[in-house]
Image 1 (tube, rainbow, N blue to C red):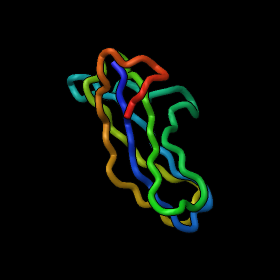
Image 2: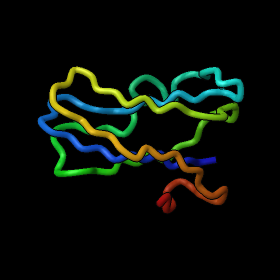
Image 3: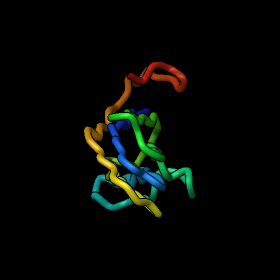
Length: 103
């Protein structure tokens, strides 16, 4: 099944970048490994200053044993301010196909 993971971010004077890491967990709440490989595990990138709030969206699937996911907002090698709001994880219809409308 595909999921739409979205967030709203706003920055001021950002030198560096903001991103998220996703950590799926099994039904016993045990982590089953970072979602993605290497830098592919970094999602929802925001770099530089924004003009107000900007939405970032990821449509993805998780391993079948994933029963939940923790979203870790991260900044690294960064100065400035980042605000994050409205992180939402929503299952898409079972009929969803990649490239389709995930709104």
